[in-house]
Length: 133
Image (cartoon, helix red, strand yellow):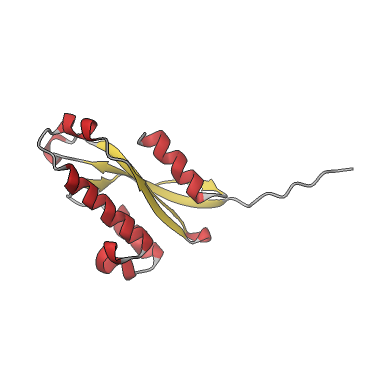
């Protein structure tokens, strides 16, 4: 007799690590968040954590509220709500494309990486713990 187990199929996802770069000229950064996109499961979300002491070690004059505002904007883009401005009205794929594009702001995305998961929310939590926490 064989025992069948029901498994949720895994799906491919992409993610970027969000970096706070207080001074672009010094090329120093602290990981502050992760954005995860899984098209097959219709999932786009960000989690973040600002460690003020670590950030101020790079730049004592850094406006931490400005960093948190930038990360709140990213939350809004992911959620497709008013916090994300005009880009929030685009498709998830377009919103992820917007978020993964390099910019010269204080919060920048790192390179795109990939993985597979049956639970993108849990995968996002694990990435935040491992890469930011």
